[in-house]
Amino acid sequence: MQWNLRLRAAERGIWKSAELRRMLADAGLEISAGKMSSWWAGTPITMRLDDLDVLCEVLGCTMNDLMSPEPDKVAARRPHAADAVNSDDHPSDSSPSTTPVRPRPGTPRSTPPL
Image (cartoon, rainbow, N blue to C red):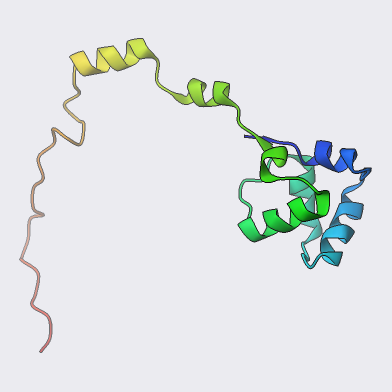
């Protein structure tokens, strides 16, 4: 996903993260300077949906305006077709599906207390 916070903020005439942070606080969302910095400087790793609601309300936009899908990045994460074909032809002996499950050696578990 591409994070478009700064673009949406600029469309509203907001050029500094501190200004947006004040607007969010006025709307009832108190966030730390560090969290605001991570939102402003790049793509946040996580975001609460409640926070996203307030952010969209303050900026007068939708979630789709703040985030755009990047299908090329998704495609790049997939294994190559040639690799997938080769791995199907020669299954590995160490794959979890071919390794038998064996019990641990030692005494059996004790019974629970009465």
